[in-house]
Image (tube, rainbow, N blue to C red):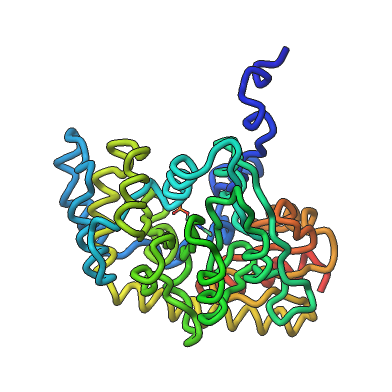
Length: 371
Ligand SMILES: *Cc1c(COP(=O)(O)O)cnc(C)c1O
């Protein structure tokens, strides 16, 4: 008997999260250096200098436990959002927050709703607590928002056992988004006993004026949870820090299952500094907007389709099985992300880099595709 059979049945069936390939792993495997990683939607500009300086200044406190309540960071987030700090829950990455939501509100006999091609953590968080997943059909490939989450289908998928609905806006790995009116209509359509989690990991990248700020609606919808992260535009993925904005009663439930010191001191301090660094944010957003345009134009030039994106990545249709293309790109020292596990076997997700990094990826792609 395999010891995996001693695990709970739902854990035995669980397919683990597949992360982007680490640079060091590829170095070990191929014995090459100078690797370009465009696989995990990290900020090519790195972390804010202010965050780095804050960490330097905090190194003397490594022997002490962190502030388990994350008081200062929660205050800073609340101030920025015009909300009460009672409604801010901190996580070890927003992944942790999604897990807290599952542990507090899901379990055997309950259901979570999310879309096809949605972020992989939703099914994992759901299944790991023994709840069932109801997957709503996404928009078809001929829709103006191909492969995007369909708010009507999400609302229709809600049943009597549904307690949580997860929707990322914009979504990863598609980059697609839901406009203001449609998201509001979804919130209106969902019954009050279903928590709607709007995962805004990429919201600071979006420049579209029709893009909603769901946090502004928290006073209207006590069942709304908005999650954000410092891993993407803030460039702090290594530190693991994210948060949820919600009604204080929801935050109370999440805090009951939260580990007492889930966010470490350096993460707390760096995140607080990063929040204030609007210049770094602005530069990162501008670089991304230019890079998105660069890659869209290059794909169009090559006759390659891509999924519309307002995030810091673009998911391109390579018109053939993408896994061998991914592997050939690795041999060129370029790491991107295959997304067959998201039901997109002919697509690759490419993180937007600096202009010369995007150009290097395109050169490697041309070589690999024989263009
Ligand atoms: C990257 C990402 C997250 C955040 O992950 P962290 O745990 O905060 O690093 C959350 N949701 C989506 C959709 C993401 O792509």
